[in-house]
Length: 263
Image 1 (spheres, rainbow, N blue to C red):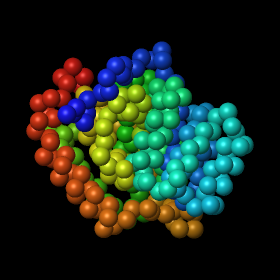
Image 2 (cartoon, helix red, strand yellow; image 1 turned 30 degrees about the horizontal axis):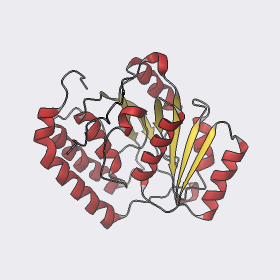
Image 3 (cartoon, one colour; image 1 turned 135 degrees about the vertical axis):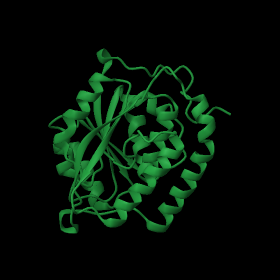
Image 4 (tube, rainbow, N blue to C red; image 1 turned 120 degrees about the vertical axis):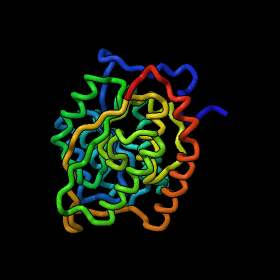
């Protein structure tokens, strides 16, 4: 069996500064109040935007199509026929970016939580280390829900066990910059919220450099369009299953992890 971290055959996933082309990937599921602002904010720093509609309602689908119709040369849209989860939407966006020839993709959630003024930090990190997966290290205010705050602590513990190090950054932030070919070559199991921590661990096991940049995160009110699609019981069970499987694999992955590409 081919290891889950192993690059696809024939895939040259090293990136040089001379071949960088960057797009944004926005997975969206029923975020009609925030999507337009997110896309416009992105385009102040990155021209091309790939929107992956993850089986949204009619209002959001219409908005997505209107955005694409208003800027067809720079906004690319893919509608998934049914809701498959954030991980599946991000994976579809990265595959779309690969098909279009982009070397890097900046993932931004469509819920408006992220400070898009921090995008230059990600781009600077990319230019300094083109091979790296660059994650946002979230700076929270007092508006973070307590359950999110404590849940992240548990996730950090599991990530440390799976990676064999406490040096990896926050695994849950949906603001991150991927080297496209390297990420598409990784095989993942989780199609929903647990995709974010899984892809970090699998990238680390593959020897992809991991970096982080500080970025502010704000939790919006319902009136501002703030909405959570985290399904408490279902997604927590998926997280438990994923981290159990990754923890069982971890000792072998530490031994197999390439030594020539440091995090």
